[in-house]
Length: 141
Image (cartoon, helix red, strand yellow):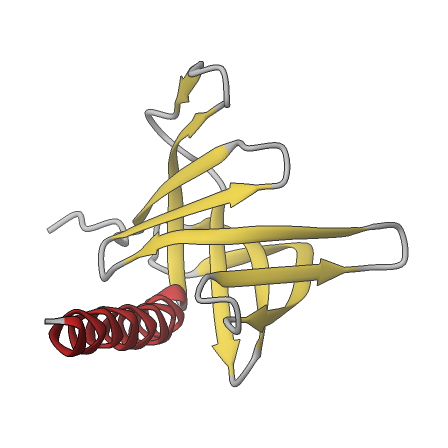
């Protein structure tokens, strides 16, 4: 019986470890793209919803680093860069996907809670959760 319990426990531990590693890989793979903010939720449960956004986050990932650029969608389907780009490094070693930003003025960290083909959720150090949906270009046809 003791052997069965130990074997079961080891199986659960290895499965959990593998799931976390797989999860961070999937999160990282889904991070790149154009993201439109939908809402921000504070630790106190206050929610700020955004019905329309004139600025979109464009995230690119290459290896263990990336960039987040603020862009404005144009009616012709292009994007205008507003000059705000932040570089980050990606750390998935803890089983969570962590984005580490650093510029001459400050350093900060964000945790990717969820990143799928159509949605993105990021939490900052203050506990604010930012919920995004994948941006769809304007279609007037």
